[in-house]
Length: 256
Image 1 (cartoon, rainbow, N blue to C red):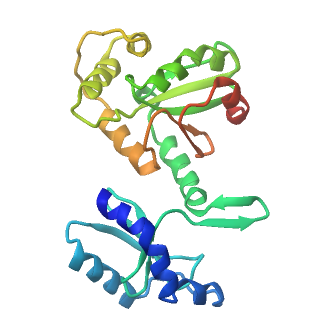
Image 2 (image 1 turned 45 degrees about the horizontal axis):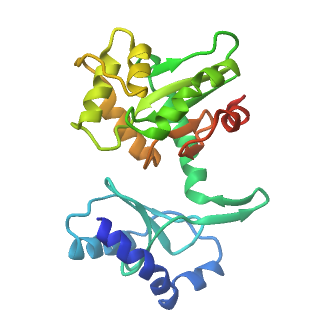
């Protein structure tokens, strides 16, 4: 999939424009977003003929660009495809509005992230709560061996002092079944999970332990939310902040 993605990023946009797909639809009247069955069949057939290993999980008509379709690949990206399935674009689409320039994908995904996060049981997270009033919260997809995750963890007391609750979710970057994954399982299974993650985030070791745990489910959830690295911080609104941000930057963003 990676080689395919690298190839098409440079080629597909030009191909779509030359094919006369984008320019006409930008001037077209608003159309129904119902998927045309002929287009759905053509898109699926085109991908199957060239890459039978790609599994398409969903095809939707783009409400922003009539005649263009959003194709979601299982365990892969969402691309924009022409109705004949011959051309497609990998990348984000942006909308110019009164609010400025906004990512169309992010606008759609933020409320979905918020819903997903609301369904996570509190006991499945490792939570560092303020001693006083909670004024906001952040969800952090973390990896105990990630340097910037460790740096952010050092600032948890500062976040807590400002009333921000830190809710850790597991995202072992190297994948499931790796040494980091095993460490995180041990932390989530520890009798004192906060002490365990504190120890791991300072480079220490904890006793190996196994139990029923949410590590794999949270790793998969992170991927669905668009997490590609750690730390990945999600606000209560569902907005994703990729990468490290200092506590001083996060506090105003996370305060309700």
